[in-house]
Length: 364
Image 1 (cartoon, one colour):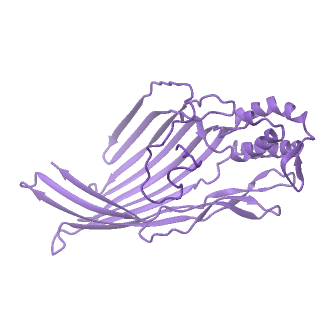
Image 2: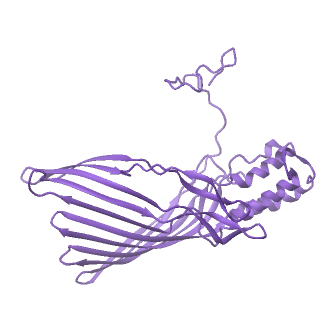
Image 3: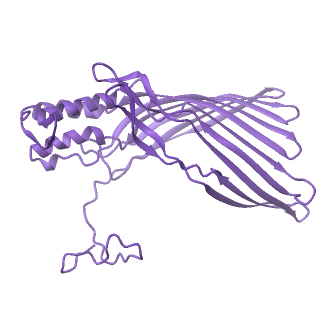
């Protein structure tokens, strides 16, 4: 916005009323235009060798364009992510299609996924540049790359128990193993640490007890890079390895509630990994994880359907309510070692609050 003669903005930032953007000025410059193209493919095969048994296999390439307005640690435009995913398994149709059982294994591998997670590593680096009076070298918000592979299983059971009553239960597992992380930052450190060390005794602009020189900031940056890369060969934090869900519904076929359908269910996920204790050398000990809480949510639905034109036209309306209990208790996302092997929660998040979804469908 353009300031007035008194140096004030025309509309207070704290205003909660309607804002006019007539005074908005263009600022900054666009980065270079980048273009990435890729040929992707997907296919699936289904085989029914006999009776109730179906075998299936699905494959698909993965291509994700990168964020256009961000860069890596060297200031280069971000690369696109590539990968592949496949799943295969068996499906059984039992008791005249009243019971379906499915077992699926899936595998997904992705190269160069980008993450906005460099804050802890770049903080001491920027403190070094402050001490050296080099604001032009500050790391504003560089993204990082990660390569990983996720494997897992999903088991499902769908039952048409009696007329009008349908139930589906799923149980799944997932495990992600990181194969590369912060690789470009290793090269950045190799290039810049020798330069920083020439000014090792230079005082920091904002020192604290036991942390007052460029040498201290170098040591902290090195340790944080080690921490960031300790995930290689391991599962990332905040992943929940087990999950399950249940959905059941009943449609009334007679009486005053004829054509009304009611349902409910739950979604559960196991404890997430929040962080790790440190060993005697000060490195993260992957054998001593800090775990959070399991997560559960309950859902409900109610719907109504009606046929028209001798059954040729069907109208359905349904209201879905997610997190019926509106559980909004903050849950931990990240913990750090307090120096004695105990977790201290440093990041939390709020579960999705109660939400409503209304669908209106006409089939013909």
